Image 1 (tube, rainbow, N blue to C red):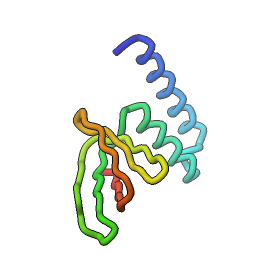
Image 2 (tube, helix red, strand yellow):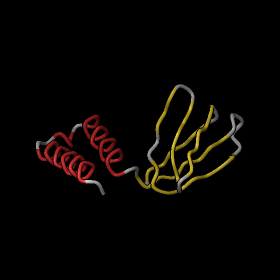
Image 3 (cartoon, helix red, strand yellow):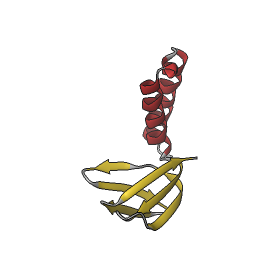
Image 4 (cartoon, helix red, strand yellow):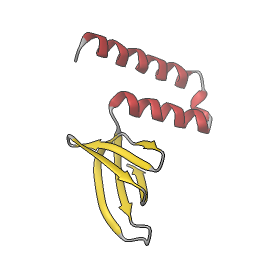
Length: 96
C-alpha cells in the first residue's frame, strides 16, 4: 500500500474511532454516516445484492465485499474485478 494511501486510511480510521468515542454512535443517522465512512475506507462491506425485474422475477444475485453507489436511476458496484451497472429494476441490498 502506498504511503499516502496508508496515511489516509489511518487518518480516516482515527476519525471514525474518535466520533464513536464521543458518543455519536448512539444517533441513528450518525451510525449510518459512520458505517458509510467505514465502507468507503475498506472498499465495501459483506453484502448480498439481488436484482429483480419490475414484475418481481429474480434476475441475478451477487455476494461479496461490495461498495454500492447510486446515481440517478442506476446502481453501480464492483465485484471480483468487474464493474456492474444496473439500470432501473428493483435492487435489494442486504448487509451481512
